[in-house]
Length: 428
Image (cartoon, rainbow, N blue to C red):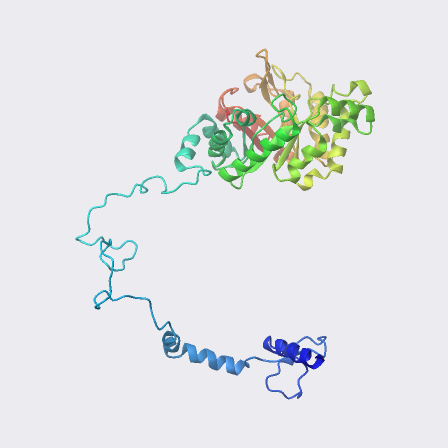
């Protein structure tokens, strides 16, 4: 029985070109010289076909223009000669029975078949997830589309800013995502921010519902605008508590949909590529526990860094407080301090890669808040911001083409002096 097992093993190895020790060291079929020096002694190499034999085999099949290969083809080519007695061929077929190449002229006796429906400006088949050329052209001609061209000319990286949460709740996500994607495919656009204040407002009632929205919206946008980055904006107040357990317990209860682990999962699951954390609550949310705005901000970025969120995506700090009613009235020294607190601190914390500043927005009473002078009048705060040339690529702002300060060309040219990125409001 033992001898039989050895015989079977040896036969198997020999078929693979590897055999048991050769009985003769002078075996002409040996290829042991090709093996590593540390190969086990019980493993040897044997040619199934020596290099010379392999060359002869190749010459046999390739010689005479491959005639031997042609002669070895199937004996029966599977053709039927309809002229032979007994062979029945179906009639009524189309064509002239001859092979034609694409682009060959139409035979003179061919019947007029008309122009196929698929020939024209649009392709024959359009994947329902894809943006058609007509949709992209229409988007390019919209106010936002025109602003994309204007912003691209300034050299700024462009994001499309939209809100798809309401469309999701209304059952119209697919249609809205396609409209946003038509803007996103414009030259110069790098990504889409498709929701703001996510989980902080009353749009959704549960964390599971938010996850479902993110999954569907992310899938729709990645299919319709492949290669574009996806972003959302939110706030995670409990991060500012630091080690204060009472603060953490109260804010976890107050903001049940904004659990840090759940929010971090949006990045880890690949649902979004950028997460913007708002800082508007830092000055007031923690007064009960005597946590200052500076300490709350420090706590937040320590917590973000400890969770390694930046390993899954980009983290952005967002601040609307730089803009003031009418325009900031700060001196140069005050503006410098504000920049230190609101721009430098998040970047130096090594947790936020970018800072997004709101430079113009309107409150419920219709009052316009600006980070610059009205109609771009001289302003100390704006002058100090223009000095941040070394971090310009890390600074972003939002712009609404429907509510210009002067006009899109003037506004975007001025914004490009400070910011390397811009989120263009889409109207959706």
